[in-house]
Length: 500
Image (tube, rainbow, N blue to C red):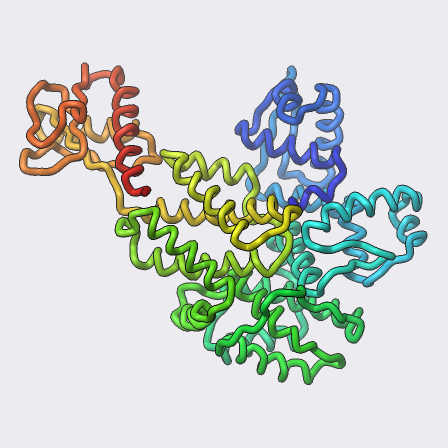
């Protein structure tokens, strides 16, 4: 589920107009917007008028103008699309229902309809549609209450706040002295630091717990999901149990035994810990050495990476971190239902453009489909879990590609004085696809090269004739397209040799 699916259709279109304008570098025609959104031009014009008024009222840093059928979008660098999205979110009926439930625990149908300014029949229709979205999280609003496991309810509200609100709003989240002391105790007792974002996440989560316990305390019966192993036999988990037991003594209500499992899963699944810290890796390594399902699953995925890719070209540090990251990702995917993805489709497409060969992303898709099958995921959850895994696997592929020690070495044989030759080499390098890792250097007879680029005809020992590109002229840009195609083709061939 995407956060902005909580908005009404016209609100979603208005935000999609902004996203489309961003993808068109801030300028698009009414016709282009209509085609992209799949609506009539008059609908786009109505949405633009409403959007323009909203932005003018709330964001002086943003301008939206229409001139002769073209729409222009500009900002001064002080506002983000999340700020604008949150403005819409706060006004939406679905979001207000969810926040009211968070703050109050339940609602009366007639009172809620009055608060929202709609009829009870309209509210019933709204709740049915909202429940279709919540189904991904194994949650449902029934008789004025949000029902489902406590694990899932907390997971949902954390995701909603983390992904739906601006960063600075989450950063300013207030926590009582006990909560702040709890975070500090965790860091001191366990000997592990949280990242700055991790501390903000902890504040959000502790606030959610405090609210839930204050509202329901002894009423919570269904903490965890049935049929899943929550026995975590490692020092990290046991230390967390002890800290929670001491912490619970200061509350006017009881903390259930299951709280330790929920906390452990939250910390591990939400990348809260400083992964560069040796103690963090030591504690997580204990978790990985257990024989429960997520550990075995992560190891199977890791081995498949080793089987399908020549990992000798990847650094030992990356491969070690990969193990931990896979463990984190799979904990999240296996133990929690429903995801509000870190990336959206546009981000994934942008990442795709960073790769010289889509074959790399095909691996991410294949792995996601394979792992969802291993998890025994139900049909109702399959699409969302597969999307979540693909997004994270794609991110790992992206990082792996950046780490990859694989470049094309090209010898440039130009019969000029060395400094002049460097000028021409630099000129060519500036016109080669930046996604390709390539090193252009002056040709030396004793050196080994993948390719040769030259403007003279001669034999190059050890280099097949098809790997030699003879330029028609160095003094013009006539050959630039040929150089790009030549280098790109052979780089892809070299890259594909890594994949088994």
